[in-house]
Image (cartoon, rainbow, N blue to C red; front, side, top):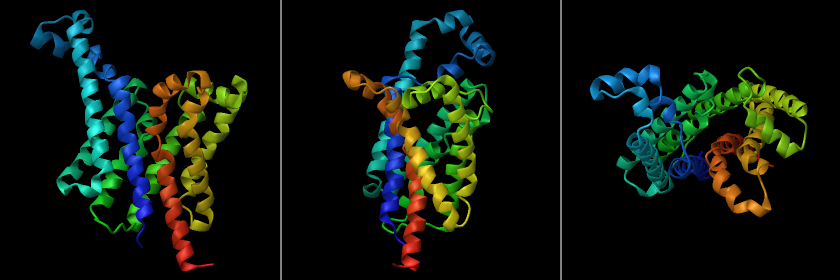
Length: 288
């Protein structure tokens, strides 16, 4: 079966991740300091080769400038890979390897966020769809104009989806400390109290677990879980803009929060690709 539309969904997911992360690194910040300011890890490295005390290292303006340049450099790289993902069908296969390198960069970024959250494993795997999207696109791009979705490929899509939603649910139900911005966004969007926001997050957290299992069921059952994954994935994607939306400050809202939504687009585009595949397959086998 050939589905160029599914290729487009996965392509848009990969493009969105890279351009969203590029915007973050070029104009905002990334958690590189959680590694580069780790005294326990780097103090000896800083002292012995350079003879620099730790306080001098972390307060040195030139070192801070180099960190900023490093972050901006990653932003430029992500923009380059985003362009590669955009024009992947027009580029020689040699350039496709940039998608793999970009995926490794996203995995490194996920590690930095995980380190920042005291090595909560769930924090890393919450980025599964973002890390995996470029690899998925690479796989499809190798097929030239024939985009076949094998059973193993579809299983990978489901696994990445399940990992992302399960780990999101771990925070929502309180297995890991619930991030304050989860509660704040819920209160702003729903107009509820803090206690109601916590109850809402508890419910949707358990629904995250349910859909992470349900998408592996036969299609007649899985379609409901996949449809919910698309709906909830889209909801969490736009949540940051929605929670902070203000017509009077629209330019600032978009400047600060648009990239946060763009980089999360795989959270609904990948489940949508799985849903569309099985829906189209059913229509082919059992036409109306």
